[in-house]
Image (tube, rainbow, N blue to C red; front, side, top):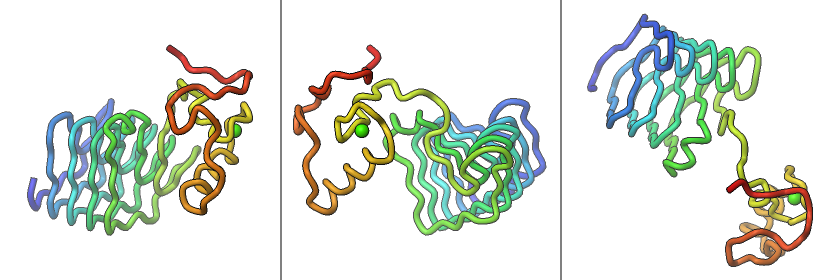
Length: 185
Ligand SMILES: [Ca+2]
């Protein structure tokens, strides 16, 4: 879609303006004043590239007022502004499903003046919903708790020469400390 305007649409489900399950490139376009339960402007479950475009003034009763991303997505040189969500991510909500797609990039984007009225991430909310199915894997310092200390431990190791994660690192696998954390099979 090149130089298009998608405006003033309403979806009961996801994707007020656009629901993408295929491969979509949006260039120099505007998605505005649409509404849906999730992804007020755009709901992306496929491969989405947005360049030099604006996603503005959209509304979702749930997550992702402007854009809900649950798959491969690139946004470049674009603006996400003035969107509202009743759930998480007034501007953009990145679902944990996007983790499997392994690619969500924002390059030279402006995310401004968005509102998440009742929950988290007025601008961008990452990894809404769902349950971490292997909490043991997130326990970077192997103290059998998953909290901010694990994120700090990982960053210290990666960027400041801090201690390496406990065994079986560098091999993948469960930590050796007995405790309540587990992996669902
Ligand atoms: Ca921990």
